[in-house]
Image 1: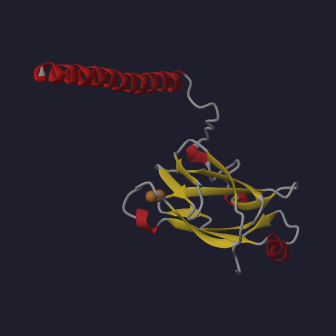
Image 2: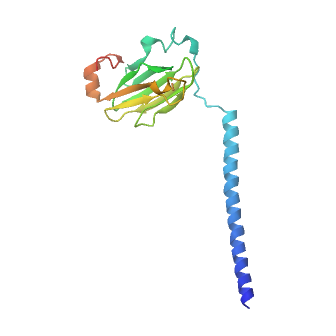
Length: 187
Ligand code: CUA
């Protein structure tokens, strides 16, 4: 009789193992389906917000001429920051912003692929020549942040970084008044 108890136990174990192997197979099938679907979906429909720009003419005309770089305060008091990421610096190398304000950061590259992040925030993107990278954010508190390049862009990569100075709105207004442009100069 002892043998049939063992046999019954084995049958139960067998049934559970079968059941769980179907669960595992189901999970794998779902993951594979998601991979195939999203791969095909994003191949067929590339992101709509891709914005192109002629990387060879940035300094000659258009949005990224030197006089238009840095922080711009719009009439609605939001900020737009424009930067060029190039081997091996950001232009300008320091930007100043008011806290608690919607900020749009627009960056492009004239040479190779760069990237940037702003320490202590989730601002993080790649910068590809021929495209404009745009990040929207808001800095809640006054602080100094570093903004390093995080895509290896050749021998000077480690030295490629900028500073982001966030000031309280009142302090920012005191320093920059109602001017539409703000820079780190003299701070
Ligand atoms: Cu630019 Cu690394």
